[in-house]
Image (tube, rainbow, N blue to C red):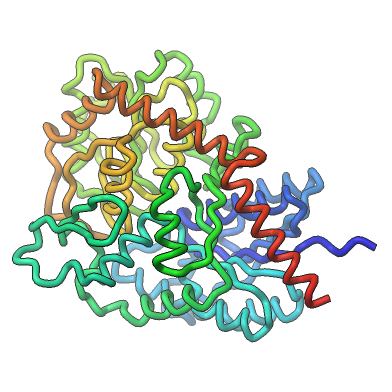
Length: 474
């Protein structure tokens, strides 16, 4: 009699940047015959339930399990079940702390189901202890690559921020495979000594150190020195199984649905617009689902775009962001208000560059599509991702952003600096060199996920290890 299939439970943090890759991961596992169960809440389930339902109808062993989110009990406004519903930066830490309310209901489910593994997001700091009590391996997921984790580790280990005379003084991060220079204003508050969320940070670190291992949405060829740093210097067990976005390869509907119930533009309309453009001629502009630019910034971006005689662009604009009067009529662009089918857009041959906030999902999606980037980090780990793109991989050009902030911004990046970076990525010999390096990385990403590739092999190795652990219990 054959042993039953592995059962893996997935617990994503309630933010698009985390739910998207974990959903992709669950579907990847299901395609390998693993029974995959995603735990989420009522208002988050519709963001990916269509794909899960379609996979299940095709016979894949995947399902969603919904549990309630007692928002008010957790000190949040009613209906605040996703980071996108947070209207004030002051609510971010309370939202992180609210993840504690899921410990008891998730533990009850794990005790009842007895799965072979749980993949839990970084914010569920209790997951390692809970899984340990039930003798279930916990895999850690933090939504970034090995480079960011390695840089943060080196910053802490070598106390690299200490003794700097000014916040704008560039300093070298010691002990890394490449020469990485930063300034303090580009770093998250906790790196600079802010203790306001120290309890959460310490709990996250302890949870990672004591867990069974880490799954990374990356691939070895993208950051080989940092994958080794993570495993050998930091002593972590890790499997690189990305880019997970490459799992959305079954046509327009798959790519268009990724990340939201519906996009803000019909995918066929978007494709028709792109089909009418020359290869590599369109600049795509998007700052992600949770990063904000200042109220004055759209005018500077518009000014930069209007400085070009001939430049087609797609610009994803947040609700409430105001563009200059007559801008859309004067330019050769497509403005999308709300959610855009990003993977669908980036994969189109007309796209020649991507103005991005350097969120890890966006960065990897650009790599997987072979698109060079204009880098414009805003918060979280984005300034570190920028260093990987511009200084290590050399597939991007920065606009010169230097201000880390979750809320109001004091610095507005001028249109001249924006236009300069756009030009370097879209026009001339340097642009061709950037594009050539980006295309080589794209080829590596695809090969990594094919039979015998690094990500494919890491996934096989992980599943075999989980089966071996399960079989020892039987």
